[in-house]
Length: 467
Image (cartoon, rainbow, N blue to C red; front, side, top):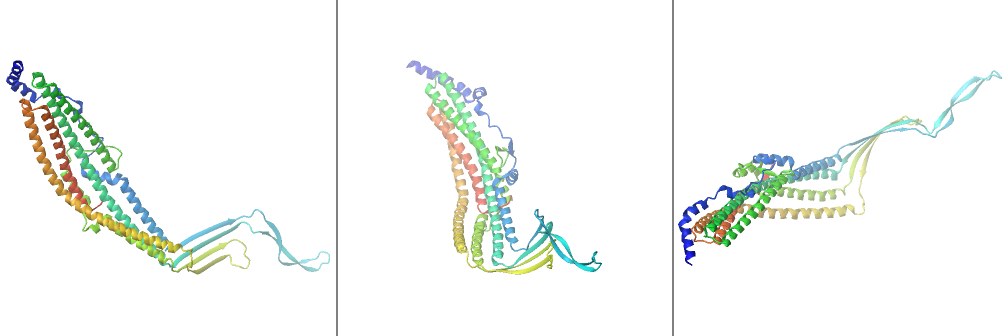
């Protein structure tokens, strides 16, 4: 017993100098390959504008939406073609392989009979090939609808459908800008968390060095060393997981920007400028109904109603005019080789087996579905705007709480470490305080980026964007 007391006294007398060295362990004892930062990818964003330019040029979703607009414009031109004149030309050359020569009397002539010396009249014949061969025929036809209510209405519907596609494209731009902004914030967040994980591992290694030093001096036992060593292993595991999350965040940013590789962000990029940068490509909508997705849903309702009316107009008769011009090299006798005609065509639909009635019911059902989809989009939009606006205040309050928690955790860790150095604390308290500090540091970093993400989301919740 006296021996143990003597050992404790000896440690207390020598502790100040020994612990002074233990407070700042040699850097060589903290050399660990896990402390090396994750290598930056080949492609690194220098600013927000670079991200938006890359998004506009490489996004498959954006290009798909642009192609949908082009397809709608082509459909509109197809509908217009039904109202314009249709001109077609034909040319044929006919050569018959099997023919027959037929003598045909084409006239008479007077000849002198050699036997009698008298004038006689004899028929003149000529061989005609039948059927006639090597015949050229040319023809031109023109048709023009004069009265066709269904076609005119269908053309108007196609123009409205093109407008709906353009509005969907605008909403796609807003969605892509929001996704890109969130992906950039996620990468910056992962970078910050990865750095905090390295700080946590370094501090855990420092505590391990301190504990081993105390164990060598007899002021700590093997259990203390094991506990702190376990904390090092936990910090190392957290660091490895955080590094992989960073790589995945970079890959997600690459996919969001349209490249199949990791995309990093320069450390000097300012998150505060993200909101201003987003405002440069997005403008606030006056109301929820003017937001691109709601406006597109309203336009689709209008198109669906017009489609139903278009079926109704197909019950009406149509009037058109047709004209044809043709010529041939064939011998047509007394007829003209070149002909030209014009005719009016009145078409009255009588019965098609009920096809129009079925189409009318189907289009009316589609119109009702479009109205319900519009109502659903409005309800969802109201909730999205309310949640986005509320998320800013929630994120700011959460940041305040996290800041206070981080300060308390940092002070707790300092006091616990000081008490452990003086021999008044246990290794369990030391490890617990260190773990709480690491969690508080990460939580505060996440809350800081949540504020930026919430502000961007609130601004884009009522905005229309152009890339």
